[in-house]
Length: 420
Ligand code: GLV
Ligand code: MN
Ligand code: MN
Image (cartoon, rainbow, N blue to C red; front, top):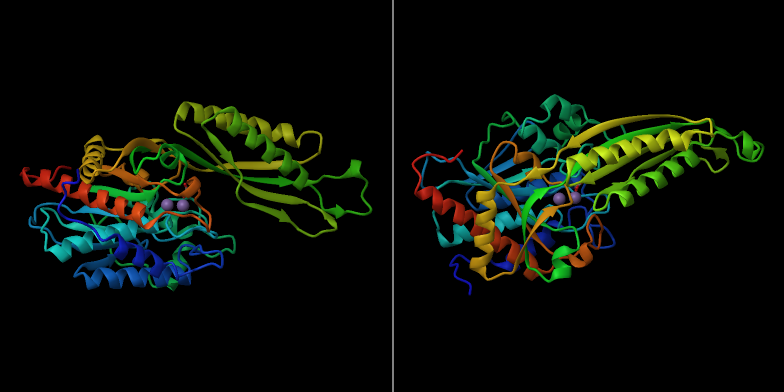
């Protein structure tokens, strides 16, 4: 039986999701809102105005992370943070990241509407460049916050057109003056769609997230020789695209050999990409993931062994570099318990689960107690314009987010000092 007395308004949350979905809307009903694009600026401006309308102070750190704070009763307590990201993939959906930020906004709106005073301040966060699609790696600016990367490293990341993250931050007016890390908080809760099929398949309403699997990204360049497609006999070709194709097939096999591990190639550039030139150079990216770091090591070894095997016999050269390693993360057990109790209070069914996708929470877990809440998405489909989660599912997630934060906050009332 539901026992909570602060009830979020699912329709208001839904309206906010649909309103912000116009910033970067795609014809198939999704969103293209690459980080630090003009549409990212528009949604940031919208979010800032919405937070200010609720009486929050909004500030931005030097890598564009946005923080909005509603004061609590006790000045000696650090805020409790809630948030996610507003950037999307090039063919992204309406919910990945957005639900976590706007669900947090709806939780805060509910507190404000009812005049409820928390012990600790409540802080909403929008992290910069979670997706890692425009600027690799993913979770970049939560990573700067957590001390994994320096601000200079983040500023120097380039997109495929050679523009840097630092320039683009300044261009859209979100290179803030506050030092990264100066917005301290004592705990972070991130609401997100599951992005996988488990909750839907098991008809569970809420995922109580226990951690995030390990992720490693690599870049590979294969070199062959450009030549005329009509005049160069098959046996004399050094076809970089053919070598890359064989490598991609071998990488897929690495995933299949180490299930539930996954191995993917998502970005490929073929040069010179002319229909009557044998390709001379191919660049592609590799993404390997597994919940167990020791098995991820074996996947990495299998991938590295496959590359020379595929290049052999075709007289191809190649270079490979690991550009990112985000180890597997276990979330904080006290916060996980707050989420479970928050879901129980609302009367929702739960399932404990690890995340297959990367999230800002994975880096923040290094510097503060952290956890996540998942809600189902249709067919487990995400990073897709048709990504779909219902009004009720979004509402349940935001309700559990609010309940979990209040569970945590109530415990603070009994404690003389901040708990971290
Ligand atoms: C982020 O969406 C990731 O999991 O790569
Ligand atoms: Mn996300
Ligand atoms: Mn994503």
